[in-house]
Length: 460
Image (cartoon, rainbow, N blue to C red; front, side, top):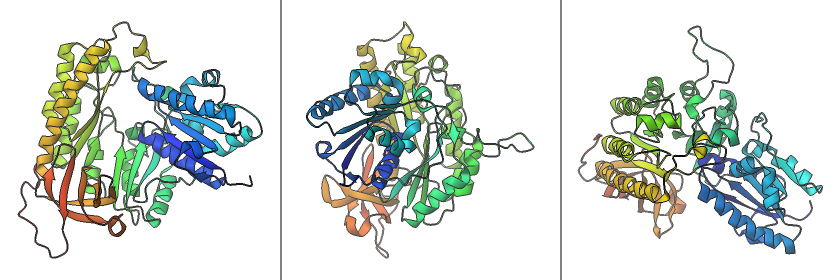
C-alpha cells in the first residue's frame, strides 16, 4: 500500500474491548495506517462493539448507518465491525448492512492484518468461528502513556443466565505467566507506571494451563501470577479486574496485602443482594458469602476501596428482593458501584423467560439504587479529607487546564493544581482538601512543606 491510509476506531463497552482496540490499532499502524480523530477523514473505520446492553448495540447501528451512506459515494472506504455484536450477529450483520467489508469476533483481534488482506483482495469476510487465541505478539497502540492494560485470560466458562459474554468471547484461554511477565517488563521499560491485569473472570486464570501440585491445586492460579509479576521493574502499581465471588480466595486477599505494588482496590461484582435472584442468575454464591469476602478484605486491609456491579429488574425480581440489594449496598458501603437495569440479550436463557419486568419498574429501581450509591460513596469519601494520598498523574483536567488529574491507590479520581508537562506519569503526594462522592480535590505537597494535621488515617 503506497499512500498512508487513515484509520479510525470507535470503542464501545468494557476494558477488554479497550485493550482489544489498542491491539488492533497497533496492527493497523504496523500495516502503515495512520490514526485520525475524525471518522469522516478515515479510509478505514473500525467499530469495536459491545452487546452487554441493548442501547450499546443500537448506537453501533446508528453510527454504521451514517458510514454505510458515505460508502455509497466513496467505494474505497473500508468498514469493519469487531467485538461482541460482530460475534453475536455474524452474517446477519452483512444482510442488515451490506456495505460492511469485515465482521470479526473478539477472538480474532490478533488476525486483523490477515483478514484485511482478504478484504483488500476483494472478499467480504466474516470471522466468528471459535479459534485458539494465538499468543499476543501484537504491539498495542496504547491510549495512555501512564497506565496500561495487560490481558491475562480471554473468554469465560461461566454460564450466568443474563450474560452473552461466554457465547461471544469464547471459552477461557489463559496466557502463560512468562508471556504476561515479558509484556509487563517491556511496559516498565517504556515508562508505564501502572498496569491493570484483565480478565472477564480473572480468578479463573490458570485453570486451563497444565500442571497440578501434589495436593491437587492448579499450579497456576491468579494469586501465583501476582507473586510472579509483582516485582517487574519500573511498574509502581498493579490493579486487576474483574473478580468473581465464587472463586475469590483468602489466599488472593493475603497476596494483595503482602505485595506493596498491588493497589488497595477490589472490583467484585455482586449483581444482586437476594439469594433467589442470584440462583436464577446462576451466579453460584450467596449474599452471605459475598459479605464474608468483603469482611475478610477489610480484616487484612481496613482502608481498601471496594467497587462492584449490580443489576436491577432481573426477570421475576420482587420489590422485597430488590430491597435486599439496597440492604447489601447500605451495609457494605461501596466506594463505587456500576449499576444497570436488566436488558434481555439474544441467546441468553433469561431473555426467554416470561416474567420480564416493565421498563417503568426497572427505571424506578435503578434510580433508587443510584441515589443510595451516591449517598454511600459520599460517606466513604469522607475518610480522605485532610489525608495525604499518593496520586499517579494521568492527564490535565479537561474542565480546568490549571489542574491535573490522577488516581489514588484506592482508585479515587483526584484533581490538584499543577502542570501536566511536568507531572504526567509522576506519583505525587497530595493533601486532600475537598471530598465528593466519586472524586477528590487536593493540594500538592512539596518536600519540606508542612502538611495540615491529618484526620481519619486508616479509617475504614
